[in-house]
Amino acid sequence: MSFVQNFPFFSIILSMFSGTICSVLPRKAAKVVNLAMLTIVGILSACVLGFTVASGESYTFMMGHFPAPWGNEIRAGVLEAGMALFFCIIMILSIVGGTHKLDEEVIESKHSLYYVLLNLLMSSLLALIYTNDLFTAYVFVEINTIAACGLIMIRESGRTIVAATRYMIMSLIGSGMLLLGICITYDLTGHLLMLNIKEAIAGLVVDGRYPAPLLVAIALMCVGLAIKSALFPFHSWLPDAYGYSTVSSAAILSSLVSKGYIFLLFKIIYRVIGVEIFNNSRIIDVLFIFGLAGMIFGSVSAIREKDIRRMIAYSSVAQIGYIYMGIGMGTEFGIVAAVFHVLTHAATKSLLFISCSGLTDVSNFERSFIPLTGSGYRHKVAGVAFTVGSLSMVGVPLFAGFISKLLFAEAAVQMVGSGKMLPVLIVLGISTILNAIYFIKTVIRIYTPVENSEYRTIKMSEVKLYSLILILFIILNLVLGCNSDPVVEMIRQGLGMFA
Image (tube, rainbow, N blue to C red; front, side):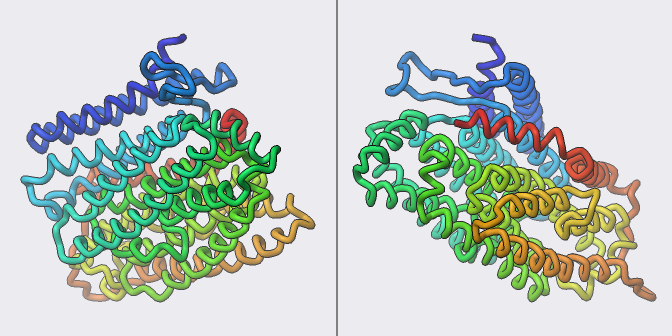
């Protein structure tokens, strides 16, 4: 075994160990440890990505001395390593981009706790990406939930406590359904390792045994993860959770937390249930319909919002709908588009939340649209960054969002005669128009000149680090939009390794 193959395990353990260390450190030291951990994990993930691309196959790492089916395993391939690296990049940029607001949003005595939660969140995301054991995945789903809830309520305002309560209630419902699905699956198959479950399920389907319990197990796991990732109509917790948490928390929650659950769903479809069996179930059609509905209703809710952060939050409901629409297509093209949109949404939504904080800073910290008038002139870098994020979400060429929508359209065209092509193309067009209505309207608002403005103006030289983070986010978006072919090819290669 190559030494590089140990790196996924090292990454998970390092993240958890860093959380323990941060709990006893002063805030500045905790921040340094957190960023150092993310940098090291990013480097380790890049090494694993290079190794799997070169070898052309995934591998399993046995934890402890017990082989399958009794032991616990990690499985790494191109898609897992690439997603881990991408998550590290987004988290580093989101944390540094929101640093300038942390003193205002979180009391000083809780800064170390904030970095503990970030470390635990990263360890849970890495475990969801790499684990090959279904029950271990559930354990880290709960760790992810607790850490995310802490990131919401650490601001300690009335709205964040209410938001955290709503999030916890809905998330526990989703977790309970996921656990029930796992228990039924274990009862039917006698296994917890994913590939062993897949083989057992294939045997059950061939023999025609237990079709109803198997369908219930699939439904519970899929719907449980859909609830946790805020698929419409299970999104009621999302606007307050994203809208009233700290800037960094909003960026991380919107871009990474829900994507961890969705990535686990990809693994369940490919490694636990099997693509063919999943496609033959009616669950895929339910996810498809909810995805289409989310694309419309999420955008309509965003149009009606008068708070810019809640508008961005409701936009996430629509973008999660895109991902589930791709899953619901039931084709490789649809899954590839969905995975690419995970990257697009993570990169763009973080950019929008981070840049939004700069615009509100020069608008007397108001988040309604009238005070934001002309804020793009008062904070030029934040204005440009928000514009880039908005154009990406609308699907303008050169930006990542355009490639996502192009991939979804190509996936729909490949489904001629299936009955899903027209709904996808029609809803994709309607959603794009709705996206343009609320994002372009906001861009026009922030670039509408204001005479005799009493608001302060911030120059780039005053916020050098913040400006650098926004520029890096813009570059990342342009890289995904202008150089998407290698990324799409890696996604195809990774999906091939999934099974």
